Length: 409
Image (cartoon, rainbow, N blue to C red):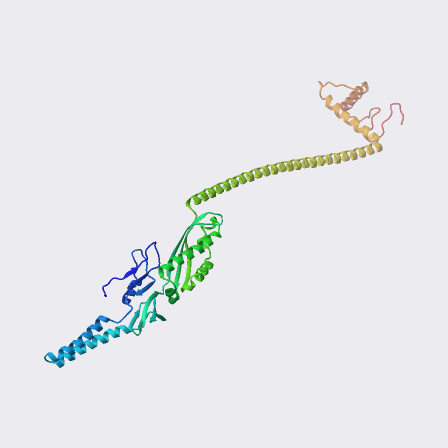
C-alpha cells in the first residue's frame, strides 16, 4: 500500500483550477506538494481509508496467538512455542492498535474530525493522538490559492468589448464551511462565475480609454465584494490583481490611428501658431523700426531746429552788436564830425599813395575835384621835408581847423 500512487480526482468536462485528491492519509503531504498533468495542486484531500486500524497486522497477531494455543499441546516444547507465538501475536495486535491512535496532519493543512458521521472539531498540522473511532474525513490546505479569472469581450461604458484577465488570491479560513457546504470543483465554477460577474460590472462602469489603466486602479472595493460573496463557503479573498486589460486589436489600431491623427493635428496647429507668432514678431519688428526711424527723424528735425535757433540767436546777437557798434559810431560821428571827415580823407590819401606808386594803374574818379585833390596830395608827399600844409577844405592833421579858401574862420 505504501507504493500505491495517489490518484487525483479531476472532474470530467471543462478545465477547472481547484481539485481534490483521494489518497491514503500518510500520502497527503506528498499530494499537497504534487501537481497534476495540467499543473494544478489539490486544495483538499479525502483519505482513501477512513479506518486507521491496521487490520492486516492485527489479524496476523490474532492468528499467531490462536495458532500457538491450538497447536502447542501437539508439539514438543509446547510451553515455549505457545509463549513465543503469544508474545509475537500480542505485539502485532498492540502495534496495529497503536498506529490507529496516531494521526499526522501534514504541514500547511487542517484536518476535519468526525464521530459516527458528525463533525466534532478541526485540528491543525502536527502529530495528534486520536481514538481510532474518530475519523479524519478531509484535509484542507491553509495556503493562499491563486485563481485565474479571464473575462472575454466585456462591454465598457461606451459599448466597446474589452478582454481582462485577473489573478485572485484567496485562502480557506473555515475548512468546515468549505468542506460541508461545497466541493472543490463546484466552488471552482461558482467562484469563477461570481468573479466574472463582478468584473463585468466593473468594466461596464469605465470607458474604453480607461481599460488600459484598469491595472493601476484601487481594487479594494472589488476585493471586499468578492470576499462577502464567498464568505458562506469559508473563503476569504486576499488580493485582486489585473494582469491583462485591453480592448480588441481592431479597436486599439483605430485608437492608435486616431491618436496619431490627433498628434499630427496638434503638431500642425503648433506649426501654424508658431508661423503666426513669427509673422506677428516680424510685423512688430517692422512697426518698431518705423517708430525708431520716425523718432530718429523727429530727433534730427529737433536738432536742426535747435541749430537754426542757435544760428538765429547768433545772428540776432551779431545784429545787436553791430547795431550797438553803429549806434556808438553814429554817436561819435555826431560828436566829432571833423574827425570823421579826416578819417575819410586819410583813407583816400592812403589809396592815392598806393596808386601813385603804380604808374600803370588806371583810375576812375567820380569828379574833377577828386583828380585835383589827388595831385595836390602827391605834391605834398613829394616835397617831403616841408611842413604839412593842409589843402583848402581838408582838416588840419595837427588838430587845427582848416582855413577856408575864402578866408573865413
